[in-house]
Image 1 (cartoon, helix red, strand yellow):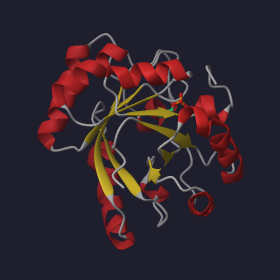
Image 2 (cartoon, rainbow, N blue to C red):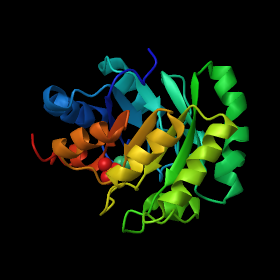
Image 3 (cartoon, rainbow, N blue to C red):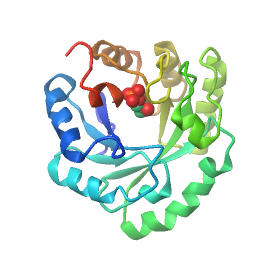
Length: 227
Ligand code: 1GP
């Protein structure tokens, strides 16, 4: 099933932080209130073998499991989709095309379905792991015209979706009016994540035009407000 049908909530599973069993316990705890539509598997840190954890996860959830890759080392056969992310906000060729070239033959061999996604890091008021690992700078949050120029370029380049990322644990999540402007500008599916900690924010983002809201830390910590 195409993962952009209706308004979605994707729960981020970081195999570096939780066992699949512990993550599934969190997922069940929030299933009723959040109604998650997919599990996103991602870590910006670990480059080792996460496949065993993903295999167990895939065997225990009925939700689609989507890779949100930090590196081509994280590919394995158990994903329903791979977000083929290009870090368009940055100017590091490794995350614009280098990783993709390393990943492509493996993706073909494994027969995985990819979704080409323009990934935009937007300043979330703190220095994030994504910034550190990718060695790129985020787009200033008070420069919507710059953000819009990036998403327009993403559309002209043929990306299938746009991911607005404030970074895991961001102090400031992506401004809702930016989400609205991005949606109006390109009409592509919009994914938003980073620093989202309440059900109210999930509703606000959906109302602002986001197709998918991603939640990691708040669910991982069992600390989502409004539940
Ligand atoms: C996914 O990086 C986010 O886009 C996850 O952020 O951990 O702050 O929810 P949180």
